Length: 101
Image (cartoon, rainbow, N blue to C red; front, side):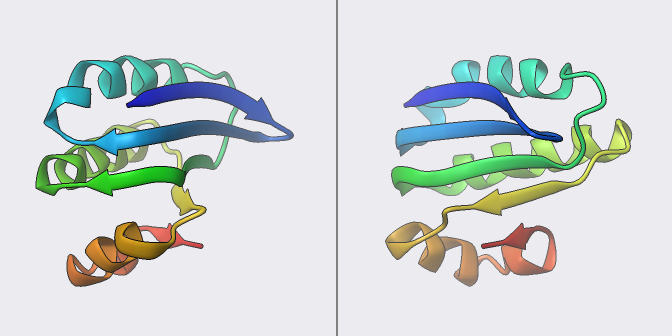
């Protein structure tokens, strides 16, 4: 998986690409730390438009991001969600936990 953090207007954006699974744990954690370190960035966006696959460990990592963001008083939105990634998020009822577009 590839993870890149950038600023977009008032948003901090984490762009993910490739397979989002347990093997991506360290890279994701480092990207989350960078994302949360963006001064004044609110809300946070996780761009899943280029993610081809995600599993239950990826869902857990997204929940970890949500908890850390909440502790930092920041909101998290999942953007660019489509295809099988959307199906997995829908089955897991993530729309109750995140704004998803």
